[in-house]
Image 1 (tube, rainbow, N blue to C red):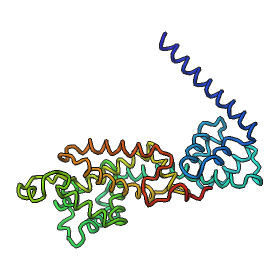
Image 2: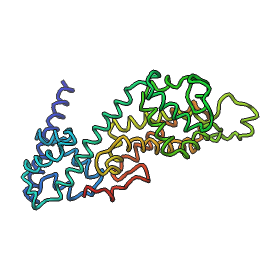
Image 3: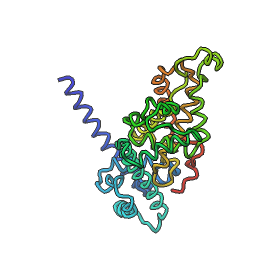
Image 4: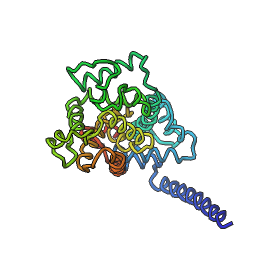
Length: 326
C-alpha cells in the first residue's frame, strides 16, 4: 500500500509539473508575444545549446505536428517548418530569421537520427570474405599500415603485426561488423602519419617503466603496448555507444552546421583513437590486462566533456560560433 501511494504521488507530481510548465509557457507567450521556439532561437546562439533545447521542446509538445517534426524526411523539413510556424501563428514576414534557424536545427536533429541508422546498418553488416569489396578494403588497410611489405597469404600470422588477434582478421570484426573496418581504413587513409605512429608506439613498451633495451633483452612474450587493430575496433564500439546513447549530440550539433554525416562520425573516431593513445600513455598501465579499466576511465572522461553544451571534441572542427544556422 505504501509503495502504491508513493507511485500515485509521483504520478500526480509529474502531471502537476506538466500543467504548471504549460501555464508558465502560456504566460510567457502573452508577456513576450513569442512562442517557446522563438524564445529559444532568439536567446541561444547556434550550436548544441540551441538545437538541444529545440529538440526537447518539440519532443515534449502536446502537438503531434511538433512531435513528428524530429522524425521527418530531410526533404520534408522545409514544409515541416512552414507547418510549425503556421501552427504557432508566427508572422514569417516579421520573423524571417526564425524559419532559417528552425530549419537548421531540424536538419541537425533529423540528420543525427539518420546517422544512427546508417552507423547501425554498418555495424550489423558482417564481414564477408567472399565479398570482393570487403576483401579489397581489408587489403587496403594492410597496404596503408604496412607500406612496401607484401602479405604472404590472405590468412597469415602477419595480420598480428597490425594488431589483429589471429591469422584471419574477419573473426575480429564480429562485434562491430563493417563499421570497425570502415573506421580503421578511414583513420589510416585520412591521417596516415598519426595512424602509423600509433601503430609503431603500440608495438613498443613505451607505456611501462621497462626500457626498450631491457624489454628486447628479456624477450617478453608480449609488448606492453596494445593491439592496434583490436583497439581500433574497441574504440569504434565506444564511439558507437556515444552516438546511440545521444551523448555525441553535443559534439555533433556544434560541428555540423546542418546534418551530421558518417564523415563526422569517422572524424570523431580518429580523434578518440588519438586521445585514447595519449590517455593510455599517461595512465601507464602495467600490461594489456588493464585495458578495460583504462577504457572505462577514458569513456567517463569523454562523457564528462560532452556534458558541456559548447563542447566540440575535435579541435579542428568548427566551433559553435562559426555555425551558419543564425
